[in-house]
Image 1: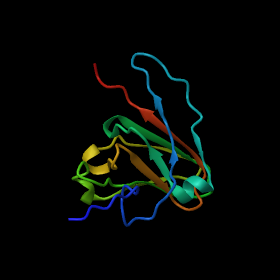
Image 2: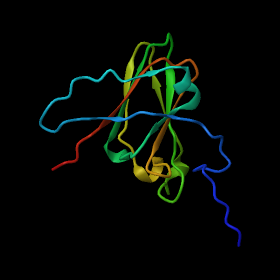
Image 3: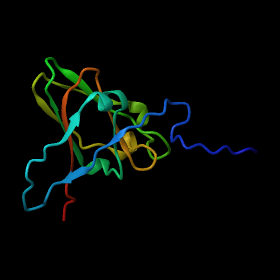
Length: 139
């Protein structure tokens, strides 16, 4: 048997330098000043976003769309053994022109990428912002 090492977490797929977007943590029994979010520019549209150390069941994504028409945002189905429901496919959400949408929470078994990540892609021409919120765990 020959084992081949690969730095690509999904061999056979194009390697994309996704932009990391960090969580804005919601505060239980408290408040969070509305974060500005990360600007969706041509780099994010081309390469997509990665959410590292993702907790899909406690992840809520807000996307604002400043484009002149509705644009789709895609949360990619996962890869690897942890994503045993990935065959259900991606989730594609339309965000209206000059509007906003909240997407999530998500099921780990469907959306978690190898290495505890989530991947988000944008339709060509999307402009606006993305903010990733981490919902607090019940206690």
